[in-house]
Length: 274
Image (cartoon, rainbow, N blue to C red; front, side, top):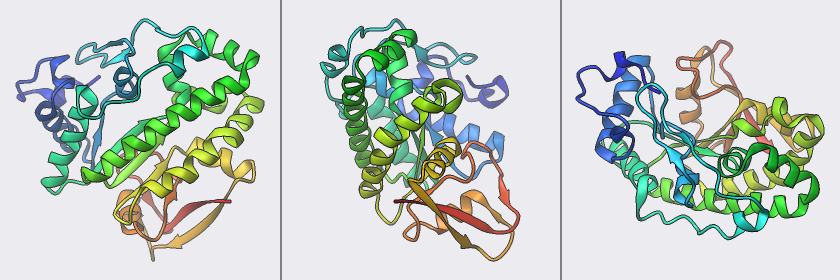
């Protein structure tokens, strides 16, 4: 959710403010100013992708924000039967248009895209997701790859709207939730290949900021190496990665949401997939 301090005086009503490009712009600018950030981050939840394929979403209010509603999937086949995202309508279109407006105003725009574990657990009861993975791992991977395909189309749309930073997260797919064995398998079977495809969908005006938990997973499994870019002294993390556009594709050093992070030695670590 968003604190009352942020929205005071904006004349916004919730959850309506989460649904329209103009109110999204106003909210993104207000959050940026309140936090002292140097970028505008959209969207304000992790439900946009699942809503766009027919998932139930409770839009909540200013305090709670949008969250997943009643599950609609029970089997892998249910996932695979979901429609492709239509980027011409719905809240996902409004998010993209908000990105376009902000970029047109000269803002640095960051778009968060959400990985398959979080999406699956928004569309199916979490315990059933893990049962599906145990009993039908190949079908589960097929579901994950379908979701990855949709995310790449989302990135294509974001590129056309002037987004400069794509941040990839998957809060339901981290080590603490999956455990070591499943985390390693997911990293090898999905994350590595997806990110290799993702970097082909960005141009020299963009960069991918990866959740550090996934960066560590890729390094620890031997699927990525680190290349250090020396920026010549203490530097703001966001300013540094924007400067590295066209020189680096993926950075995973810090969370983009940690506003004001400074790298004291000026060394930015690029993640290079192998």
